[in-house]
Length: 242
Image (cartoon, rainbow, N blue to C red; front, side):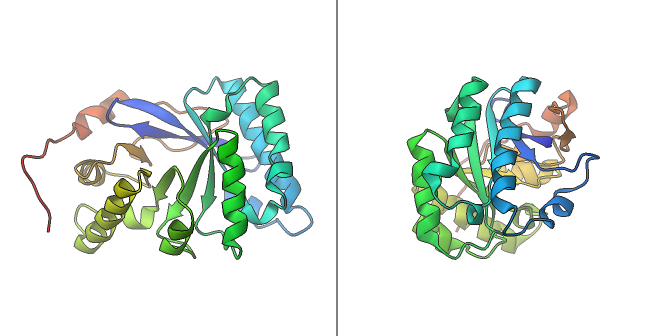
């Protein structure tokens, strides 16, 4: 697995790390996920959860551990979560420091089933998130049916947001909805200080992207000190948008 930091710019600290599937020679996730089928999807989904917790403990990960899961691999939530709970207990890793992300690119046909999965997760104090928000199949329909703790804005929306009026309008509308629903936002794929500051001006404090660090293969990347002077938070002075 590889790990990429999620950064809290308000405290200049690492909020947590997302665990990303890799091959044994650091092959990308697509090369692994393309091998999944109905006969191995469940076992794979179970194994990556345990492996992520195992690595997190070995590497001394502090803060949140974010794990992607495959909702179509989950049959009975209370059964499928058992291995995760056992691994967390065995490795003394608190469940309230584990975040489960469902990617909006995962085509979920049964939203009731997804709601049941996350209801079970919340029962055990896991944090829930929608990954790649704004670039998948479900869009606002998924958000209307179920409100997670966190949404992660897809990089297709954050890319060049500082110079793209249409993207700014769309993202700022999403941020307004999330604020109203008390949903925290992580901006993904941020690569430039300008992108970061544009979103920070609208209240976003959590970021993930190459501006801060690329994923580290079986290690926990740190944030270079020279990043912080580039993103000193600007204060708004009675600025209103219409």
